[in-house]
Image 1 (cartoon, protein in one colour):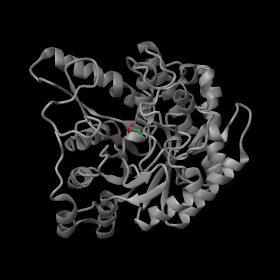
Image 2 (cartoon, protein in one colour):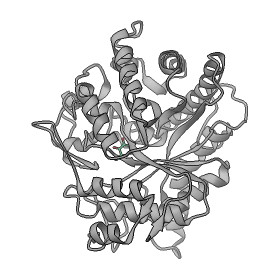
Image 3 (cartoon, protein in one colour):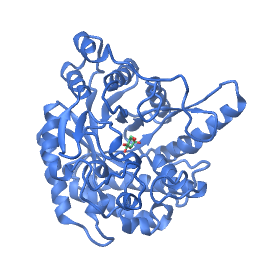
Image 4 (cartoon, helix red, strand yellow):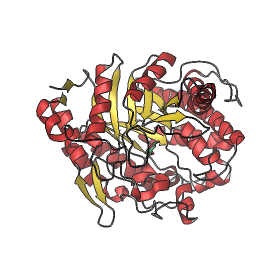
Length: 427
Ligand code: BGC
C-alpha cells in the first residue's frame, strides 16, 4: 500500500443544482446567461440534464462505489414565485434522495449554492437585511420537506466567493462592483447562516431527530506574499486574507463580528458549526490586490496553482478556530483532458491522510463535468465525462482511480503505478 485512508474516512463527490440540473429558467444565472455573460455562451438550462437523468447518475455513482454525495436544491424550482411552493419539485427531490439512500449513499444537502430565484434577486437578494426572512423561509421549507430523509446540511456555499464575485469583482450576477456591497452581503449571509443553524436544529429536534449536523461550505485558500521579505506584499496578503476569509470565518463559526463584517442584527456569540466544511482548490500569491499566481508553480487548465500542502494549511487553520470533525466538502481541478487529475487527487488525499487532523469526509468536486458558472461547459472538473450534445456519461481514468481508492481503502502500489506514476502537472 502506498497510503491507507484514515480510519473512517468516507469518499464521494459533490455537485450544485444549477450546475447539473438544467431545465429551470427562473434564476439569476439564467438571466446572466441571457445577457451574454457566459464565456462560451453555454446555457445553464442545458448543463447535464440531471433533473431528468438523476436515476442514471445515481446508478453510476453507486457503480463507482461512492459512499457519500453532496448535492443541492434549486431554490427557484422549489419556490418559482415569492408566494408559491412547487409540490412536484419537492416530490421529485424526495424521490431522488430516497433512491440515493437505498443505494447506500449518505447525503449532505446544500441549501444555497450561489443561485437565487429572480424574484429574490429583484428584491436586492442578500444585500438587504429585510430579505433574510426569505432565505429562512427556504431553510424551513427544506427541513419540512426533506428533514425526515436528510440529517446533514450546508446552509450556504462559499459566502465569500459569492459576495466577492457578484458584488466586488462584478463578474457574477448582479454584476455590482462595490466593496461596501460585498461586505454587506457577507454580513447578511453571516446572520442567515447562524439563524439557519439554529432553525435546522430546532426543527429536526421537534421532528424527533438528534443526529442533525449543520455547517456552511467555507472556501478557504492560502494567501502567501509573493516575496516574504517585501513589506507591501505581506501587508496586502494579510489584508486580503482578512477581507476574503478571516473575518467571515470567525463571524460564521463563532458569531464574533470584526472588521469588515458588520452586525446588522443582534446575534449572540456561540458555536455555529457541527463540522468544518472546507472547499479547497488553490493558493493566491500576493503582489497586488486580487488573484495572483506563482510563476514557476504547477497550474490547472484555468491557471490556478496546484498546491496540495494548502489543503492542510487551511484545514489546520479552521481547526484552530473551532475543533470539529473535518469534511472536505469540495476539492478538485479543471483538467479538460483528464491527464493530471489522478495525481491531483492522490497528492491532496495523501496530505490529508498523513495529517493528524480528524478528516472524516472527502467530497471530490465534482461527479460529472458540469456548468462551470462563467466558464460554462468549457471547464471540466468531473470524474465522469459528459458529452453535452448527447448527454452521454463516460467514467474518466480519474473516475476509475477514485473507485479503486474506495475499493482498496487507500492507494495500492499497482494502482499508483497504473494511474499516478506517469502523470505530470503542467506549468
Ligand atoms: C464552487 C463550485 C465551482 C468550483 C470550481 C467552487 O468554488 O463551489 O460551484 O464549480 O468551485 O470552480
